[in-house]
Image 1 (spheres, rainbow, N blue to C red):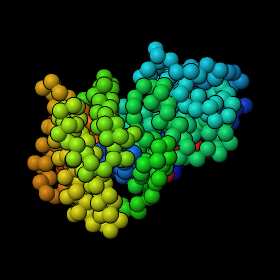
Image 2 (cartoon, rainbow, N blue to C red):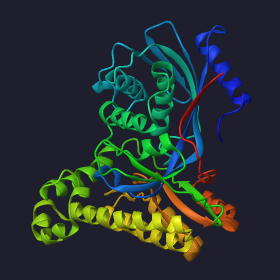
Image 3 (cartoon, helix red, strand yellow):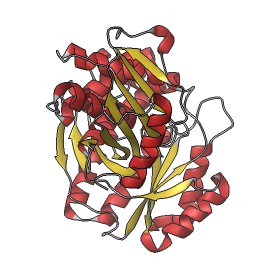
Image 4 (cartoon, helix red, strand yellow):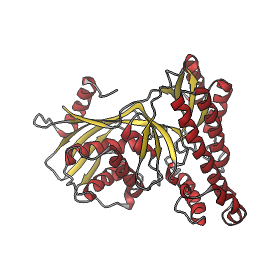
Length: 401
């Protein structure tokens, strides 16, 4: 999993030469950035809470080379071409929710830190599909980040700092109020138990655990529901949690005490409504469950981990309410959870994965049943919808050829 091979290099080189012309004089940079799976901590990171996340073996892969222009040019499969002048890096309203906004945003983060952006060309391919729940945006951001790190900063920017830069690009240039889990997981690799209690920092502790050694497969089922137009639904979760935190005199929920929340519950409910209250309850509940699941993984106690995962999944559905979109009769993620539950019973665990509102359902299935499980999910959601994944123990990385 460390690097992609010669066949991929040749394929990327062919696309590079077709896009930019032959360039034997150039020195090429290969970059590979994994997707990520949220293992525990559903919507806790943006409140300064803790999560467990793992990089997985699906990748954004690219070939980069400096050019003699003042422009970044990117050809990315399945996306429009991107061009950004390195002296025009301010966020643009008309670029919100576009790939080019992330290019501009990542370049701006390097400029902000005193590095001099210079033009480069790139071709990028990806099997971290958008809407797959693997955080294609974070994988793309760290793909760019590692390339810029090597080309502009001699590789001195740490993975943690690259993750913080990527979050800023997504929040301020792309326009999605994300937490820091996705970017940190992609940057660091492996399974990481991470706390975001101190704003703008990452406290990460690796967990040495292999699900396959424990007899289970990590399965993700994409339920066929795009969340491209659901930014407002996502944004409402941190906004409502922050409303409660601010009412309790704090910047985010991690800085509040659950006992104080309980004491003020009648007033908070009357002022802010039930959904905000329920989402705060989920935060407190899920935060406890993250710590207990980390303990279970470190102890190698898979039955305990599975039981706690089922409890967490129920909390996301009932309290966080990010399994389906209000007012819509389409509930593919809830249907996927129901089918997974009927197929596995108490032999595994399923939960909504990542942001929610469709997207992806995560399941831990016994290895001997994983293929049959994926086939059953594919029967409902389409061929290839449900796949098994392995943890990638490296984060985003770059090497010269």
